[in-house]
Amino acid sequence: MTYRLPDSACSESFLAASGPGGQNVNKVATACQLRVAVFSLGLSPSVYQRLKTLAGSRLTSQGELIITARRFRSQESNREDARARAETLIAKAHVRPAVRRKTKVSRAAKARRVDSKKKRATVKSGRGKVRLD
Image (cartoon, rainbow, N blue to C red; front, side, top):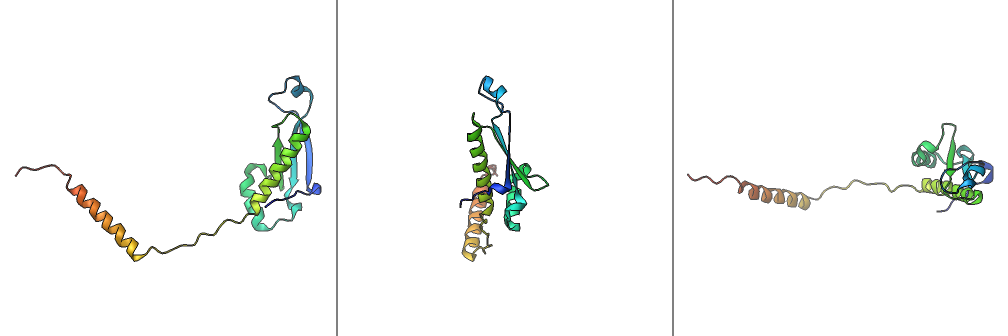
């Protein structure tokens, strides 16, 4: 599933990035910090809960998802990277996990388990010290 972020819910700021780039790093603010107002996206409560779990500390108590992208040396590439990461995270939150249904162990399976335990017990009981009476 793909998800498109509306521009109205996003705000971007740029800051100085660390890492490779020589003097360019010191001069240009290339790292992108994307802030997404999650409440304005109109997510259902279950999707919001899954997003909260997936995002962890990247989701603030005011409902802002903060993604910082500093992988690339250009502002535009970091902007695209931040948007893509936010969209991927929200798309993952939309995926409903499969419900696990309990199943009952069959009588034959229980019997096989008991038989194998008894067999193992006889093997182990035969390993004791040899007594010469």
